Image (cartoon, rainbow, N blue to C red; front, top):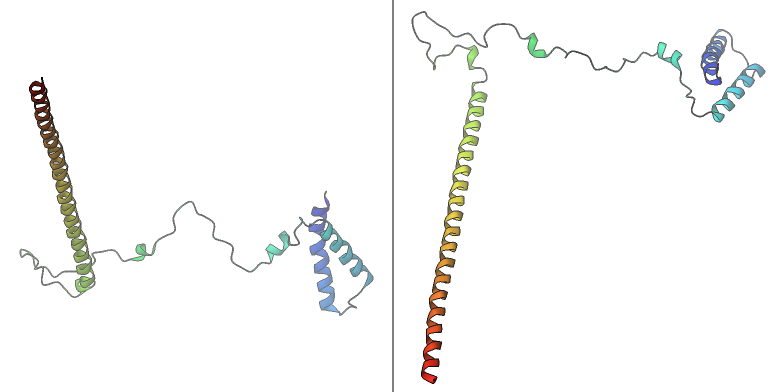
Amino acid sequence: MGLGALKNVILPLARAVVNQGAVRFPAPTSSPALTALRWSFGSLQRQTPWIPLSNGFNSLTDTRFPKRRPADKNRRKRASLKPPGPYAWVQYTPGQPIAANNPNEGSVKGRNEKKRMRQRRAFILSEKKKRKAQLQEANKKKRIKRVERKMAAVARERAWAQRLAELQQLEEEKKRSMA
């Protein structure tokens, strides 16, 4: 049995005995046995700093709540506390359609919020369509410009080939006239 295990057993018992003795009848604060016990465990703690002062006995009297451990199943959500049944009751007479503009009192709840959500979604979709159309237009313009640049390059090459042929003819005519 190591010193750490021995200390973990003796130290809480010594504390309990000393504390009970101090509660029952006040003893002199510097009794030789208590001083020797404190000195020996204090020096042991200084020599072995990896042995913690706290031990398992303290956790038996700990009043704090334990940490929540991860469970194997999810905790119950508050939505399950909702009563069963429809969100809102609508007045209905058999054989007649339910008017969309005549809801009952309960179904008005959250109507404006739902309307805002629908409007926001519609706005986002319309902006997405606009951006998509703009992107398509920009890509089309880019393709057209690329084709125009290629056509201009081909035209320049043809013009240069014609000019080169003309210059060569002029050179030949010069040579013929010189000779």
